Amino acid sequence: MLMHLAAKQTNFAAFKWLYAFSFAINNGLTFYASIHQTWKFFPDHPGLASGLIWSGLGGAGFIFDNLSTKLINPHNVPISDPDFTAIVNERFTLMINWLVFCWSIIVGLAVILVWKAPEPETRVNDEGQNLLNSEANGV
Image 1 (cartoon, helix red, strand yellow):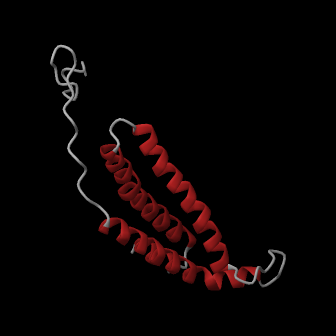
Image 2 (image 1 turned 60 degrees about the horizontal axis):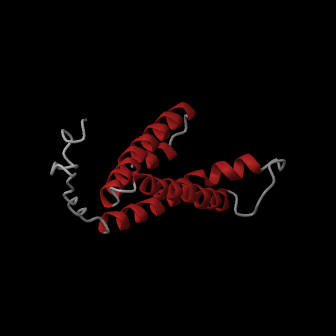
């Protein structure tokens, strides 16, 4: 919703602050929650879990960068063209709305696919102490 509001701004400072704030909130709510949940599913491989999430983030940047370019400049008008700024400005709101629509579908699918992580296995050392207990680990 804040992205839509940011896209409708005619003042650049208002756009900049709304877009940055909404981007930070969206990343905080989705990215770090994904890492936390993935760690629960792969408790023995937190590096692999984090790497999967980071690679997804990088892949998304690759996909949405190209999609943004096609939406905002579909006819590949060169930047040297005098009408370039007008064309980009005219299609900017459309681009943001399409991207928010795509992101909403992805988030909707992610919400549908969420389930509770399995309970961690109880592990004991040679003395019979629970290794998942923070006191037994000396933490």
